[in-house]
Amino acid sequence: MDGQFTTLMDEIGRKARAAALELACAGAERKNAALLSAADAIWTRRQEIFDANSMDCAAGEAKGLSAAMLDRLRLDDHRLRGIVDSLRMIAESKDPVGRVLAEWDRPNGLHIKRVSTPIGVIGVIYESRPNVTADAGALALKSGNAVILRGGSESFETSEVIHSCMVEGLKAAGLPEAAIQLIPTRDREMVTAMLQAVAHIDVIVPRGGKGLVGLVQKEARVPVFAHLEGICHVYADRDADLEKARAVVLNSKTRRTGICGSAECLLIDWQFYTKHGAVLIEDLIAAGVEVRTEGELLKIKGTKRAAPDDFGREFLDMIIAAKLVDGVDQAIAHIRKYGSQHTEAILTEKDETAERFFNELDSAILLRNASTQFADGGEFGMGAEIGIATGKMHARGPVGAEQLCSFKYLVTGNGTVRT
Image (tube, rainbow, N blue to C red; front, side, top):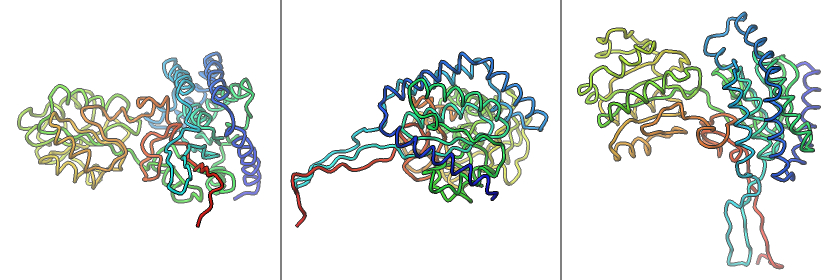
């Protein structure tokens, strides 16, 4: 790796570590004031943000980005208002730092408390989505962490303006500007520098496609909160309500196809299919979705034969795999084989079936009679998320401010000694 990038990483890392020490002791009022000031700055400077975003989108189109990637990149009034509202919601949420997680007394006279603390310095590496610049900065700040952001080259111009608005908020609240830093170059060598920066970064959060996340998991020397893919399933059980199932299946696939919570596989119970026919498949086809399937479902007009790798594939497009299964046990077995432990939904009115689905699958998010598109920290009431984690570390599912905290033990005695 080029020495200039190591030097730059050291400089950014030292500033972040110093800022993290100050943030760990900052009160909730100052952190919240910074977030509210940043929200105001983003809305005040929205035309500047839109101009930068137009430049990024034009460059992305010229580069041949997919429609899904361009959708992730593009900002409009509604999406920018969502960023502003998210910052304000995070400011209004409870401060996660200093919470007493557990407290107990020991027979030896010790009083023990487990208290939440910031992790330290968070590194976030992301593609396309400029909203991550605000969301990650805000969640790190709320949880008392400094953050180093490495946005995708596709969103470079937009991210720079949003980042400067976040810094405005920090300055207004008297907090260190280095609390939220944006890597100032598009060069991919800085990704490698971050992944090896064990002296400066405590955890890395990758936010992007399989290629990026796989690279991070393979090369990182720093611990990682990550999900590799969002291969989300919807299972229509024999006891599903037809109208609920139609609404949830269509929304799970078509609301936004380029997000990790978009459904990629529909499993239909044979008894549901016998009773209601091809309605779920026909709804998808009518909405413009390409349905790739096998066996009996290929008799439905407009379906296409699935390739062997279509089950277990993240399409991020108006494409879905579909299959008939014989009951919840087969559905669970299929999801265990092909899923990515991200998000799965069951459509059923039978409590026992839903309970088995919930108990026997180990995905980070499991839903009943609700769209997989709810796999989102904002929808969970976290204000925003820094990503969806599918690993088995303490941060799992939507990673919000609370999940960006560790803990320590505070132990009080009275001249207590161990015999």
